[in-house]
Structures are given as structure tokens and as C-alpha cells.
Length: 171
Image 1 (spheres, rainbow, N blue to C red):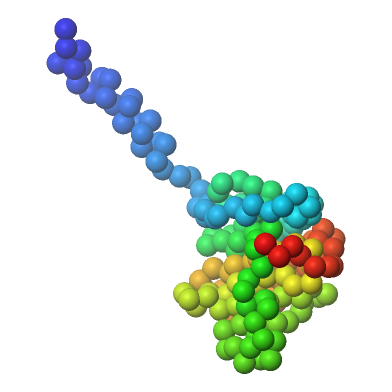
Image 2 (cartoon, helix red, strand yellow; image 1 turned 45 degrees about the vertical axis):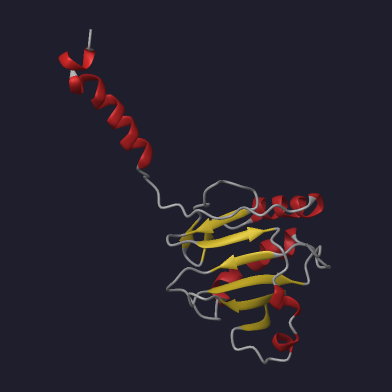
């Protein structure tokens, strides 16, 4: 007996409903590559995750997918934080240290040193320097510009509390 001859939509409708519900998303969560830090870096990243602010520059916390203790996000489009990333090549580029790179510069905000890098799409990425783990913060389009001071000011207390000063692993 062919059950589809008698009820072609009777069985198909629930399957379609489940498929559509599974493909839709009620939230605007960003997706991000999750870092794979070594054991000692992983510990301080988990410590950072626990003390990150609920709001950052007026934006509520909405962590990206997949959920991880090494990533966080605020707002939509999201400000994205990744902890335990590899050292950016420009971190040791002499041109940056001498001020000869228009797309990268070093600076500090509230006791935390940062490498500021302009990305190919015009947005900016900030990576901590002088800490035992590299913490990277990416600003979404529309917040681009080297002046991420409100974001970095909002993150400074958590970074200082969880990520000690020192030399990060060379990975």
C-alpha cells in the first residue's frame, strides 16, 4: 500500500515544519572560529570568560556560535572576543614598532597594551600585548576605526584581572 497516495501532505507537512524550524534562527548570533589554546593559556582564557562584562559599549552580551569559554560577543553585529589566539605576525613587525605601518599600530588603554590592525574589509582588530595569552577583539563594520577606546576600556578590568602580564606562548 502506498501511504502517500492517500495522505500526501499528512506526513510531509510535519517533516517540512521540522526542517524549516531547524533552519531558521531566532537570534542573530555570529559564528566564529574557536581558538585551540595550550593548557596554561586555556586556564586564563576560562578565567577571563568568567569575568567578562554583561554589557560592552552599550551592547548586551550575545556569545557567538559555537559556544566556547574562549569566545564572547556583544551586540549585533557583534563585537567578537577570542582568547588564546596565535600571535599576530605584526606583533613583531619592526615597521609597526617604528610607526611605519599605516594599517597597524601599538597603544595602550587603561593599563592594557594592544596591537591595533586594520583588516582588509576596513574593520579593526585589537590583540593584547604583554600578557600571558593573546586576546583578540574584532569590531564589526560600522564601528571600524582605530579608536576602539570605549570597547577596550570596557574590557580592560577583565583582562587585567584574568590575564597576567607576561610573555604569551609563541604558537
